[in-house]
Each structure stands twice: as structure tokens, then as C-alpha cells.
Image (tube, rainbow, N blue to C red; front, side, top):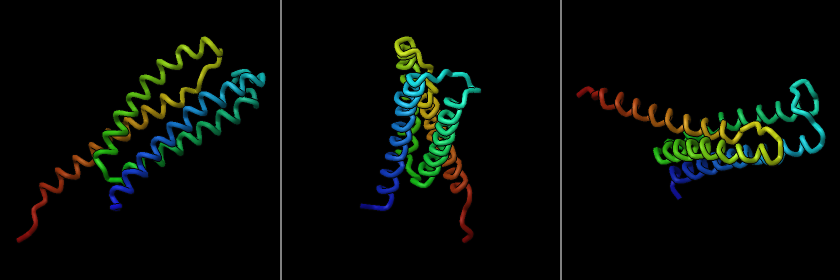
Length: 143
């Protein structure tokens, strides 16, 4: 398997793993905290530590996925991140709007935030790739 193919697969799997962690956090961690009697008062210690750790973990995941996209150096990864991220951001918000009424737990909406981040990562990496290509075309070798 070529190095480029491995890099592409690692970047795609990294993005999927980050989406899975965000979905788990919204679907399992937050309802469990509420079931244990935690209120969503930000001053309450029972909720502040898990929510804070969740934010830190998800932010670190976004940085990692951005580095993976850059490392993969693949237009396919960029387009996949942009499309999947936009889709997850829109569909995640639509899906959660019904869930809040059923379980009464406001999600952190980590999935939508990660979706938007993936979309921006894909679009920005495509833009950087285009700028590099335009800059390389302008530079002419000295004969």
C-alpha cells in the first residue's frame, strides 16, 4: 500500500473517530450526568468537570484532525471533511432538536461543533492547496 493511501486512510479514520467520540459524549455522557441528578448549572461541580474535560478532549481532537488532514495532503480528504462535516453539522442539529424534548437534556452539541470544524478544516486545506499550486505555477526555474 502506498504511503499516500495510508495517509488518506489514517486521516479519514481519524475524522470518523472524532465524530464517534462527539456523538458518544452527547448521547451517553450528558444524559448519564442528568440521570445521576446533576443540574446543568455551570457552577455545580458534578457537571463542570465532565463538561470541561469534554470540551478539552474535543478541541484536542479537532487540532489532531486538522493536522491529519494537512499531513494526508489529499484533495479527497479535504473534500470528504468538508462534505461530511457540513452534513453532520446540519443533520446533528436537526436530530438533537427532537431528543431534547424527549430526555430533557440539553446536549453540548459536540457533534454539530465537530461537524462545522471538519467542514472548515476541509475547506481551508483546499484553499491552502490551491494557493500553493498557484504560487508554484508563478515560480519559474532559472534556465
